[in-house]
Image (cartoon, rainbow, N blue to C red; front, side):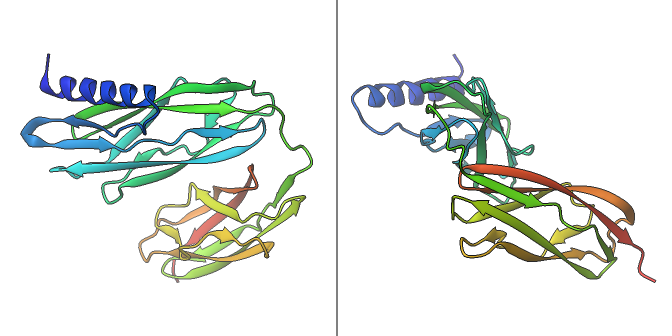
Amino acid sequence: MKWSTFVVTAALTVGLLAGAVGCKENAVTVVGDGGKKLTVKPVGAASLKPGETTSINIEIVRDKFNDPVELKFSGLPDGITVVESDTTISKDASSAKLTLKASADAKPVDDHKVTLAASGGGMKLDMPFKVTIKKGGDAAKKLTLKAPADASVKQGDTATINIDITRDKFNDPVELKFAGLPEGVTIMEKDLTISKDATSAKLTLKAAADAKAVGDHKVTVTATGGGLTQEATIKVSVQKKS
């Protein structure tokens, strides 16, 4: 048996024994070549209703390596998906906040075992956690995301976009995420949350001086709040600086 396999097996055994006596589940560590180590901290149990979303936090610790760590999920309950298409923890980060989404027809289940596989630096380990789908969703709540107007920005310049939402029967903050921005284009604001007292956000697109010129590039905007998720698309064009 390889040493790395023994370490993972031992850590998992300790975690399972601790769970059996009501203790908190342990972190899981794998040891690779040259003393490299990858550790995944315990993932808290997740609970949500059909039609809702919930966030899970994945925290890792690297030792003697600095590669990205890829996350994969297996055994998710029927009707449960991970919203984010990119589930990689970059080399400069040590955590990821991911979103589980339950379809409207997801079937209730208690303490369903899900396996999170983390791999990086030539190592791989599995971390189990539990997902519960409760009966019945709150059909009265509603989140509407208005499709933003198309935007155009010149290389080395900025442009403003407005994101408008409507809440019905809830008043939670709404978190915004952007996927598929053109190469060299970023959102300047670090906080992409629409506070509970607001219904819109004014954000700034910034194009690098060497941003690739492109027309009508499709970008997806995701709004999440109150256990609900909505998506809209915006077309972003990058023009050459005259």
